[in-house]
Length: 166
Ligand code: FES
Ligand code: FES
Image (cartoon, rainbow, N blue to C red):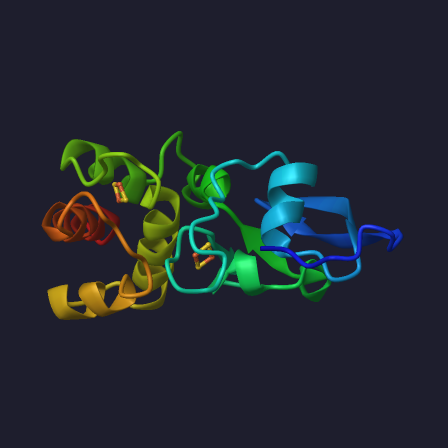
């Protein structure tokens, strides 16, 4: 739940969003989650718990995963921010291999956790291309899924890993 003062003025924030330089407006105290959805129209960023516990709102900031529900928008000034919408451009393809294999392996059901889960997987594989299955499980431990049971998610990440390291 945002506690931003709706009387506060909008201030511009400049940063790179999915590979493009942008300037979005946010009130002081605004959450990055709200700015990305309401100003950036990036609806792959989901709000689940709103408290940094479920990972549905995961984005990448300078290559590191972060919960956008507990990140103040002003703190990304000058940073590189990636949402699920920007992942294909990260590898110069129409679909990122992690996204492709989530579909192939049925690693998504209702899909609510999927953008955050995929972003955590991509960040993990960029940081540790040879991650073991245990390390993959650890890498997605901040992302909760109530549907899939995780096995197909980890299978999908391993398939993507094999493709990315071929
Ligand atoms: Fe941000 Fe749950 S909505 S961690
Ligand atoms: Fe439904 Fe993960 S696919 S919460």
